[in-house]
Length: 409
Figure 1 (cartoon, rainbow, N blue to C red):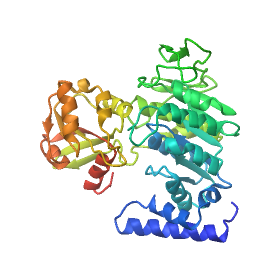
Figure 2: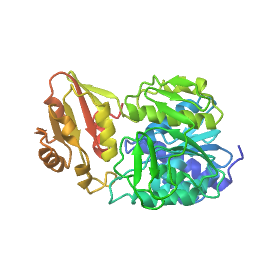
Figure 3: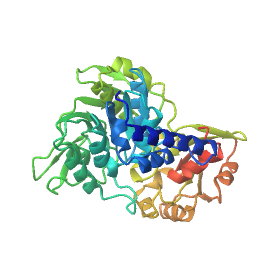
Figure 4: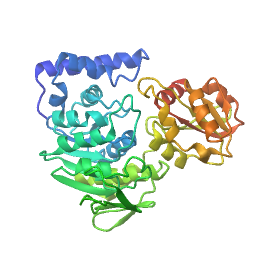
């Protein structure tokens, strides 16, 4: 790799020092502060760190961190990989990730949906993976049609190879200006944000995974990769069983996307798939923590589509703890809770905690779901009988629970 200019070397080194200090003092994992320090000293540091590397950018409303982890695991078969493993998905996090692995020939970067155009323009990444677009907290995230439009503009005229989920009409529209697209049929469980054509505004006719606009020519492209229940069918028609350790249909979709990205890097399925099977937990997601004989499995859900996937993974035979905050990273507005159908929880012991537990309690009451309020997560966990319990929490609530267990998850 080309040696960095002296100023960039200094900025990168000081950023790494700041990150190390942050970790040593217990202030965080250093994945943001290190990048901020580096960018203060050299505003063009991300571009310089990205030069001469083969990069993949991963963006979506849900599943970015997990898919980034799966792709990284696969590409480790080829050599060292720089990645933002803990979800710091804005430029400061990208700088920190690339600085920590300054000699890695490969990079896999999770990118916030809003920042994708900027990061693509800065890094010149050769591969972009686009998986889904759905409503997030509206006080902190743009309208998703605007995001898809920004993706279209960012990809137009660039030589980037896009791996895109063709079952999501908004993703398809956002990716369709790219010079090269590999379409993956990864499924779309949450459809409430894509009943209208993003091209003309007309109604979309849907049958199974297929969709087409009733009023213009916009329609689902033919996929090269197909998720088929517990397997993926590659472009040559070969079927590969996805016996991965991460649970649920959403993670099988993430794995299908990961295999398509790996092949874009020249890594065949037979070498990539065993690496995907090694991933058991992603930044605490799906991990089980234990206290006083109670085994709590941690699931993350940040928006309506994410809660739908968490319910799919959750065991209906177990009690469940729900925890919701409304801090900056979560979005202050909790009105999105009303878009989640909580009736699936009827018949289960449900415990509600978190800073906005009363908001969630009202939503459950309207859905006719009995629940027990708890002031803290510890109180909710202590109320469980010994054995297993599922926990679904949004972002900062999830991080607080992880911190309570020493983040060793």
